[in-house]
Image (cartoon, rainbow, N blue to C red; front, side, top):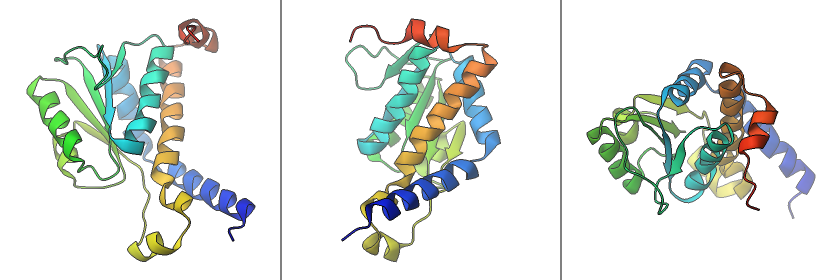
Length: 184
Protein backbone atom coordinates (compact mmCIF):
# COMPACT_ATOMS: atom_id res chain seq x y z
CA UNK A 1 0.00 0.00 0.00
CA UNK A 2 1.25 3.47 -0.89
CA UNK A 3 2.20 5.82 1.91
CA UNK A 4 0.09 8.82 0.83
CA UNK A 5 2.08 11.50 2.63
CA UNK A 6 5.39 10.13 1.37
CA UNK A 7 4.07 10.08 -2.21
CA UNK A 8 2.86 13.70 -1.96
CA UNK A 9 6.25 14.71 -0.62
CA UNK A 10 8.03 12.93 -3.48
CA UNK A 11 5.77 14.49 -6.12
CA UNK A 12 6.14 17.96 -4.61
CA UNK A 13 9.92 17.58 -4.43
CA UNK A 14 10.23 16.28 -8.00
CA UNK A 15 7.96 18.99 -9.46
CA UNK A 16 9.67 21.70 -7.40
CA UNK A 17 13.11 20.52 -8.51
CA UNK A 18 12.00 20.49 -12.16
CA UNK A 19 10.42 23.97 -11.87
CA UNK A 20 13.59 25.42 -10.35
CA UNK A 21 15.75 23.80 -13.03
CA UNK A 22 13.93 25.40 -15.98
CA UNK A 23 16.17 27.85 -17.79
CA UNK A 24 15.24 31.43 -16.87
CA UNK A 25 16.33 32.61 -20.31
CA UNK A 26 13.85 30.18 -21.90
CA UNK A 27 11.07 31.49 -19.64
CA UNK A 28 12.08 35.07 -20.44
CA UNK A 29 11.89 34.30 -24.18
CA UNK A 30 8.38 32.86 -23.77
CA UNK A 31 7.34 35.86 -21.69
CA UNK A 32 8.64 38.26 -24.35
CA UNK A 33 6.93 36.29 -27.15
CA UNK A 34 3.60 36.42 -25.29
CA UNK A 35 3.91 40.17 -24.71
CA UNK A 36 4.85 40.84 -28.35
CA UNK A 37 2.21 38.56 -29.91
CA UNK A 38 -0.92 39.99 -31.51
CA UNK A 39 -2.74 36.85 -30.40
CA UNK A 40 -1.70 33.76 -28.44
CA UNK A 41 -2.86 30.30 -29.51
CA UNK A 42 -2.26 27.17 -27.42
CA UNK A 43 -2.41 23.51 -28.43
CA UNK A 44 -1.66 20.14 -26.94
CA UNK A 45 -3.05 16.65 -26.80
CA UNK A 46 -4.14 14.67 -23.73
CA UNK A 47 -2.74 15.85 -20.40
CA UNK A 48 -0.27 18.15 -22.15
CA UNK A 49 -3.22 19.81 -23.88
CA UNK A 50 -5.11 20.16 -20.63
CA UNK A 51 -2.26 21.85 -18.78
CA UNK A 52 -1.18 24.16 -21.63
CA UNK A 53 -4.77 25.47 -21.76
CA UNK A 54 -4.04 27.06 -18.39
CA UNK A 55 -1.63 29.37 -20.22
CA UNK A 56 -4.49 30.52 -22.45
CA UNK A 57 -6.71 31.08 -19.41
CA UNK A 58 -3.94 33.08 -17.74
CA UNK A 59 -3.46 35.19 -20.87
CA UNK A 60 -7.19 35.91 -21.08
CA UNK A 61 -7.17 37.00 -17.44
CA UNK A 62 -4.44 39.50 -18.30
CA UNK A 63 -6.56 40.95 -21.11
CA UNK A 64 -4.55 39.32 -23.91
CA UNK A 65 -6.19 37.87 -27.01
CA UNK A 66 -5.90 34.11 -26.75
CA UNK A 67 -7.41 31.00 -28.29
CA UNK A 68 -7.30 27.23 -27.76
CA UNK A 69 -6.67 25.44 -31.06
CA UNK A 70 -9.58 23.17 -31.87
CA UNK A 71 -12.28 25.27 -30.21
CA UNK A 72 -15.05 26.29 -32.60
CA UNK A 73 -14.33 29.99 -32.09
CA UNK A 74 -10.60 29.74 -32.90
CA UNK A 75 -9.73 32.11 -35.78
CA UNK A 76 -7.03 31.63 -38.39
CA UNK A 77 -3.42 32.19 -37.36
CA UNK A 78 -1.21 34.80 -39.07
CA UNK A 79 2.10 36.59 -38.92
CA UNK A 80 2.48 38.34 -35.59
CA UNK A 81 0.62 35.57 -33.74
CA UNK A 82 2.15 33.00 -31.39
CA UNK A 83 1.30 29.30 -31.12
CA UNK A 84 2.44 27.61 -27.91
CA UNK A 85 2.41 23.82 -28.14
CA UNK A 86 2.61 21.66 -25.04
CA UNK A 87 4.05 18.24 -25.86
CA UNK A 88 6.15 16.21 -23.46
CA UNK A 89 7.73 14.27 -26.31
CA UNK A 90 7.70 17.00 -28.94
CA UNK A 91 6.64 14.26 -31.35
CA UNK A 92 2.83 14.15 -30.99
CA UNK A 93 1.56 13.63 -34.54
CA UNK A 94 -1.28 16.16 -34.44
CA UNK A 95 1.00 18.77 -32.86
CA UNK A 96 3.61 18.18 -35.59
CA UNK A 97 0.95 19.04 -38.18
CA UNK A 98 -0.05 22.18 -36.24
CA UNK A 99 3.60 23.22 -35.95
CA UNK A 100 4.00 22.96 -39.72
CA UNK A 101 0.78 24.90 -40.33
CA UNK A 102 1.85 27.59 -37.86
CA UNK A 103 5.10 28.14 -39.73
CA UNK A 104 3.36 28.05 -43.14
CA UNK A 105 1.19 30.97 -42.01
CA UNK A 106 4.13 33.01 -40.72
CA UNK A 107 3.32 32.78 -37.01
CA UNK A 108 5.85 32.30 -34.24
CA UNK A 109 6.04 28.85 -32.63
CA UNK A 110 6.90 28.03 -29.01
CA UNK A 111 7.22 24.54 -27.56
CA UNK A 112 6.94 23.44 -23.92
CA UNK A 113 8.49 19.97 -23.70
CA UNK A 114 10.57 17.58 -21.64
CA UNK A 115 12.43 16.29 -24.71
CA UNK A 116 15.31 17.74 -26.70
CA UNK A 117 15.84 17.49 -30.43
CA UNK A 118 12.24 16.65 -31.34
CA UNK A 119 10.52 17.37 -34.64
CA UNK A 120 8.45 20.19 -33.15
CA UNK A 121 11.52 21.72 -31.53
CA UNK A 122 13.22 21.78 -34.94
CA UNK A 123 10.36 24.01 -36.15
CA UNK A 124 10.07 26.13 -33.00
CA UNK A 125 11.30 29.69 -32.61
CA UNK A 126 11.72 29.07 -28.90
CA UNK A 127 11.51 26.13 -26.54
CA UNK A 128 10.95 25.82 -22.82
CA UNK A 129 12.49 22.57 -21.64
CA UNK A 130 10.91 21.02 -18.56
CA UNK A 131 13.87 19.05 -17.15
CA UNK A 132 12.10 15.86 -16.18
CA UNK A 133 13.99 12.66 -16.74
CA UNK A 134 12.81 9.15 -16.14
CA UNK A 135 14.67 5.93 -16.56
CA UNK A 136 12.60 3.29 -18.33
CA UNK A 137 12.89 0.95 -15.36
CA UNK A 138 11.63 3.71 -13.02
CA UNK A 139 8.45 4.08 -15.08
CA UNK A 140 7.62 0.43 -14.41
CA UNK A 141 8.15 0.60 -10.64
CA UNK A 142 7.34 4.10 -9.41
CA UNK A 143 3.87 5.40 -8.55
CA UNK A 144 2.08 6.94 -11.52
CA UNK A 145 2.06 10.40 -9.89
CA UNK A 146 5.86 10.56 -10.15
CA UNK A 147 5.80 9.63 -13.83
CA UNK A 148 3.52 12.64 -14.48
CA UNK A 149 5.82 15.32 -13.05
CA UNK A 150 6.11 17.03 -16.47
CA UNK A 151 2.43 17.99 -16.36
CA UNK A 152 2.53 19.14 -12.75
CA UNK A 153 5.58 21.27 -13.51
CA UNK A 154 3.96 22.87 -16.57
CA UNK A 155 1.02 24.01 -14.43
CA UNK A 156 3.39 25.80 -12.06
CA UNK A 157 5.55 27.11 -14.91
CA UNK A 158 2.65 28.80 -16.73
CA UNK A 159 1.62 30.50 -13.50
CA UNK A 160 5.18 31.83 -13.18
CA UNK A 161 5.02 33.08 -16.77
CA UNK A 162 1.77 34.85 -15.87
CA UNK A 163 3.58 36.61 -13.02
CA UNK A 164 6.42 37.62 -15.39
CA UNK A 165 3.98 39.01 -17.98
CA UNK A 166 2.04 40.86 -15.28
CA UNK A 167 5.26 42.39 -14.00
CA UNK A 168 6.39 43.46 -17.50
CA UNK A 169 2.97 44.95 -18.32
CA UNK A 170 2.56 46.49 -14.82
CA UNK A 171 -0.69 44.57 -14.30
CA UNK A 172 -2.19 44.02 -10.87
CA UNK A 173 -4.58 41.43 -9.52
CA UNK A 174 -7.27 44.09 -9.88
CA UNK A 175 -6.66 43.85 -13.65
CA UNK A 176 -6.86 40.06 -13.48
CA UNK A 177 -10.11 40.30 -11.54
CA UNK A 178 -11.55 42.58 -14.24
CA UNK A 179 -10.74 40.07 -16.99
CA UNK A 180 -11.55 36.98 -14.92
CA UNK A 181 -14.49 34.90 -16.17
CA UNK A 182 -17.71 36.29 -14.73
CA UNK A 183 -20.06 33.96 -16.62
CA UNK A 184 -19.96 31.30 -13.94
